[in-house]
Structures are given as structure tokens and as C-alpha cells.
Amino acid sequence: MSDFQILDASRETAAAAHPKTFYLETFGCQMNVHDSEKVIGTLTQQGYQQVQTEEAADLILYNTCSIRDKAEQKVFNRLNDYKKLTAQGKRFGVLGCVAQQEGEKIFERAPYVSLVSGSASYRKLPEMLVRLELGEKRITGLDDRQTDETFETEFTARTNRHRGYITIIEGCDKFCAYCVVPYTRGKERSRTSTSVLAEAQRMADSGYTEIQLLGQNVNSYRDSEGKRSFAELLAAVGEIPGIRRVRFTTSHPRDFTPDIVQAIDAVPTLCDHVHLPVQSGSTDVLRMMQREYTREWYLERISWIKAAKRPISMTTDIIVGFPGETPQDFEETITLLAEVQYDAVFAFKYSPRPNTPAITMADSIPDETKSERLQILLDRQREIQRANYSNHIGQTLEVIVEGHNQARGQVIGRTSQNKTLNFTTGQPILPAAGSYLPVRVTKSFPNSLVGESVA
Ligand code: 5AD
Ligand code: SF4
View 1 (cartoon, rainbow, N blue to C red):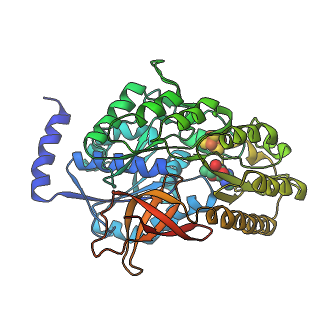
View 2: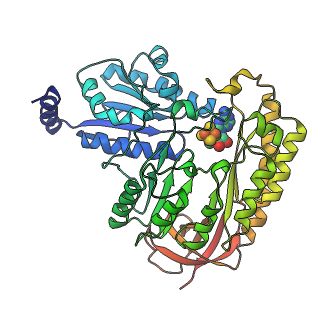
View 3: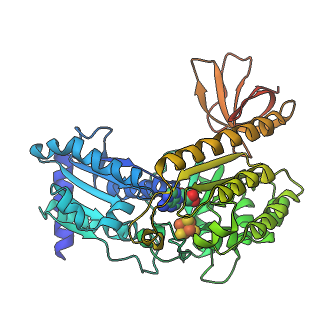
């Protein structure tokens, strides 16, 4: 018997007497949310019980994000707020992108942290937990970014019973000048389409109807078995009996091919939505960002989407105030919004990040100017959305029920285009979460729709 098994047995006895507890808080993107589901599944499998407050936990974990400075600060603030709990013997672990980026420096900034692990090392969590329980004070999992392996686990603890994520590709090889992701999540590695489809099938078998395929750069997916392209994988997931909606995020324009639009047109379960981050409407800024496309090249992809037979909603990410962005460059971003007519824009002020190529450029746009540009952009976009959303009035759209707003007596639904549609039913018993219903749109706002269910 190995030491590992002896430890396992003693842990089981201890667990029966007093189950070890953990608290996990997640910051950042859907990739992190889904990683946390896998971490929760792994810890539960190791005999830990999840609790809802730091105070109730033996082990306090933060799954962190470092995409912008503010996100990174949050974790250090949180650690600071709760460090007093170390006096009660509680242990702290920092997971995710800040862990990978800052590495052992975290032990200097917060000496009471015992575990620092980037996402590429989560496969080793069970082993790291054993070391933690043995009393080791400085455990790191930081060395696996260049791995070919992905973090798949049969123990994923999905939080929603109807909608679930599947990671199909991890990491990013694009190296945009501002972005920390290639350094925190490492090189691109795709799962086989066989394993993705097996997971989707298992989810369908246990009642999931909506699947979201995830990747930092999802459409750069390359099946290592060479069986399916990204578009073919999308279609294959959509054709699994019981699956009613398939989404995917995030797509890079460089890897956006016409067969993705053709798949959406051909397979009804693929949702009417593409998130295609543009970052800037100015070709000069795109060059400085190392995005490797021009405004015109991006707009060509948009024209493919607009030419689809189905009404495909488009959303994007934009960075304002990248070093060297002139008023003219910014104006080109504004005209791009008007040209594309997005249904949502996630806009951010440029934030210099460690290790990235752009860190060597002066952060030349004053914060005040960044804030002004952000506000102008959001104001313009709000008007575009006001018009776009009002076009739905009178339409009947299928929604999945996400929950209920008791105070307003409304049911919260989501359309295939990923729009929130709040509605009333006129019935005393409200439809259950996860059900699908046709709803007629009666009213619109820039960010949501209102309607009545159709009997
Ligand atoms: N500063 C501001 N925004 C950034 N993003 C990525 N890196 C930065 C940065 N350094 C934005 C991009 C990306 C989204 C996830 O976050 O728009 O698409
Ligand atoms: Fe970051 Fe660019 Fe990769 Fe997206 S494609 S994760 S913005 S480096």
C-alpha cells in the first residue's frame, strides 16, 4: 500500500468525525466559473464539504482573475479582510490567474496563504490537498502551463441543472499586446471531439438541455484526433437528442470561418448569437494591439453573420484608451458600433498588465480620458440597443425559464439570442426553471424585453 492510500484511509475516518469544509469564491470569466465547478467536484470527491461563508470553512479558496488591475486587487482585498481567520487555524488558497501570474510572490504579500495554484495544475489538486492536510505551508502548482493536458474531471459540480459548460479548449496562442491570458493559462490545447461529445451526451442523459462550449479562444479548436472541425463539433453537439440550445464563447475573428455561420443556419439548436470581440474599430490600434486583422477584415466576418438565414445577434468586447489611441481612432470605434449594430458591448478601460508586450508602451491615455471615452461609447451603444431591442415588440420568441422575480410577479426567461425576456403567464402556478415556452414581446428596454407567455 502506498503512503497515498494510507493517507486516504485516515482521511476517511477523520472525515466521518468532522467533515472538512471549504469555501470557494470565484472572480472573473465563465472559464473560471466552470473551473470552480471542477474544483468543487474534486474537493467533494476528496471528502470536503462546501460551505457558504469564510467563517464556516476550514479551507478558504479564491479562484482569481487578473485580466485587469481591478480584478487582481479584489483578491488581495479579500485576503486582507479575512486574514484574521488564520488565528482559528483556517488555511487559505489562491487559485486561477492571479496565482499563476504572481506565483510565489503571493506568499510574500500574504504570508498566511498556504496554497497557490494556476488552472493548469488543478489536475494535481488531490495531491496538493493531501500535502496541505499534512501541514505543509507553501504548496505551489505553477509549473504546468506548457502542458498538453486539459483539466477534465468526472466530478464536475455543475451549479445549474439545465444549462452547463463544457471546456473544449484551454489556453491561448494569440498573444494580443494587452492580454495576460497566454501567460496565465498557457498554450492552446484542445480536447478530442470524442471526449467532448461523450460529456455532452452524459449531460443530455441527466437532463441538461443547454450546453455552452467554452474556450478562451473557442473557435481556434483543433481536434487532436482530426475527426471534426469546430463547426462540425458545434453541429454534432447540437444534434444530440435532448439538447435544445448550444452556445459557444469566446470567438476570435482570426479563427472565425464561414462554416460556423453555415452550421448555425443548418442546425436549429445552435443559438442565434455570436460573441466576436473586436477590441477597436481603428486598424492602427488593432495593429498596435497585435490583433492581426483590420477593421475591414473584421467587418467582412460581420457581413457573413448578417447574411445568415437566421437573425444572429452579435455582441463584442472593446478596450478604450489603449496606448496611442487618438480621438480619431476612438471615433472609428464609435462608427463601427453604428455599422455593426451589436446587441451588447462589454467595454473596458485599458489596464496595463504584467508580462504583456504592451507593458513596455507608455500608458499614454490619462484615466480621465479613458473614462470619458468609455462613457461616450456606453451612451451610444445604449441607443443602438434601445432600437435593436424594440424591433422584437410583437414577436413571439422561445425562452428557457431561468427563475422568478417574486416581487414583480414575473418569470425570468432567456431567448436564443441571449436576451433577457421577463414575462407574465396569467396563471397561478409559475413555469419551472428549465422549461421552454413561447413568449410574446410587448415592451422593450435597452437591456431586456418584457412579454406575456402564449398559451
Ligand atoms: N485591459 C483592459 N481590458 C482587457 N481585456 C483583456 N485584457 C485587457 C486589459 N489589459 C478585455 C478584452 C477581452 C476581455 C475579456 O477583456 O476586451 O476581450
Ligand atoms: Fe487575450 Fe487575445 Fe488570447 Fe483573447 S485572443 S485571450 S484577448 S491574447
